[in-house]
Length: 344
Image (cartoon, helix red, strand yellow):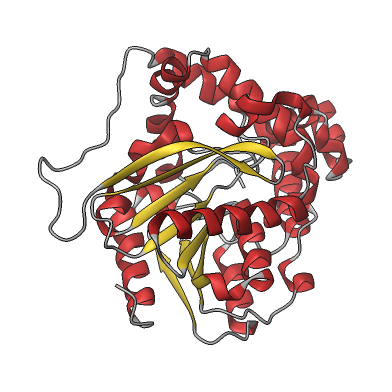
């Protein structure tokens, strides 16, 4: 759940336009299976969508990563996953209406709903499994991706070893209420009474209006220090990604807003408890201790109520993006959780 003013991200990207970025891989592949680096467009839910499968050792356990946002495609940020790809085969997917998948269909992308993206998740999972010759994979969701993932594992549990949430979204209503309250307080403290009055009346439906969205994001409680450092670093990856795709950085940012206007209400209306507490696969949450968006106490309370074949909750140093800003701690926790299942 990003809810950050993308103008800040765009400014950072343009300021860093001369900075290149490449994944920091060791000079020689790991022993075991051969490396795998594949990406392409596949037909999912009636449209072409972008998928990548990357790892230093194809014999490692496979995972599918569900990005957050919604609409926060990770195709521009693949170098961030280099530490992950040392330990796992990582499948990336720009969800319907996001990133390179948006680039294929544009604003005419149909069926922009949580339900359709869940169905797309099942199709992408099957494609990844067929390509790897595997029977199951680990599903990992970040923020909005946790809402998608919880529904996907309920729909087809036989496809998944486990579901791992990070930046676990539990209550969109609680998130909106907390952000609205903090934005009102911060605007009032700055003497911006008119902005505070506007924000106080915002509902999830109002935030489809990107001007209102930006106003909320501008005044809401800031991200943690580690999150801000991560976002600043990540902004340097936008220009190289845009160049590779042959578009402007502004086009990448505008895609996200176009997608966000359709899916943000679904994200803010999501309630994990309403979906249910029965999770048919092992369920683990690895949460940043300083997450100001998806609060750790809510995530832990949800895990406590879940009924699953196995479950666990771990807090690590970091904020909403702890899985990226603190990859060693995240991956160590993930290894521990998955190792309990005998998966290597």
